[in-house]
Length: 273
Image (cartoon, rainbow, N blue to C red; front, side, top):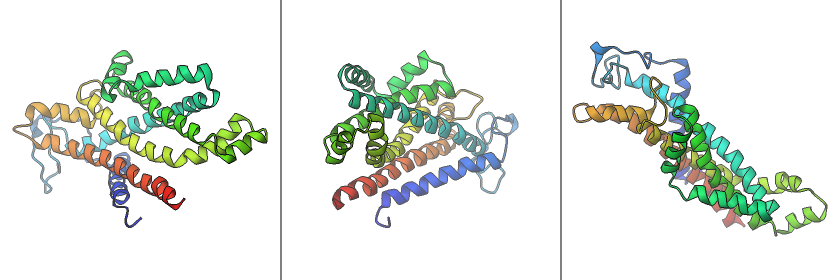
């Protein structure tokens, strides 16, 4: 743990953004959607009431960053969780049923993975709806093939191991084998993939919001804040600094944590064997 710098930094960054998220339910300096034209473009000042300054509508940037953490993390956590559950189910069905089911499921997964992540999400949001629900649905669908192929490959790699064959010879059903043997064996890789996928989901959600396809006003989103700051960036660059840092900390934190967990749960386990 002491030598795993990636995991330590990842935990620190995730703790920071989680603390901001929790604090947003308890305290915020101002109403994040309250406009005050007389306070437009106040510069960041730690001695004033607006630490990160105000935007073009006089809204407190710190309050909008805190409120935006709710929406960003909600979309990321829910979409990755749904994508994980559906992906595990489809991957397991393809690997254990084989035949026509395997062909149909895996060809659909191949088709989904053929599109770049943000392009697929944009297409799905355009078909579904803009906003939080549409973003969750689009990112969930993007996550499904990632986890389905992961589960599919791991089941195929382990189905010829002795303890799996022994379980089959004892008459265990496919469901029993899956939950008693496959899931414990796959859990380390699923945990590391889940952590890294949250970072990817945050990146996709902020990109969608930046393009006007994700979270819609008056709700706050870091990507939307970046988009609104574009026309004022040369005169007021601080408008983009706070949401940019929030995105970097969140994405980097979950990715570093996933990389650190991968080293502890998978690489070190392989070395010990």
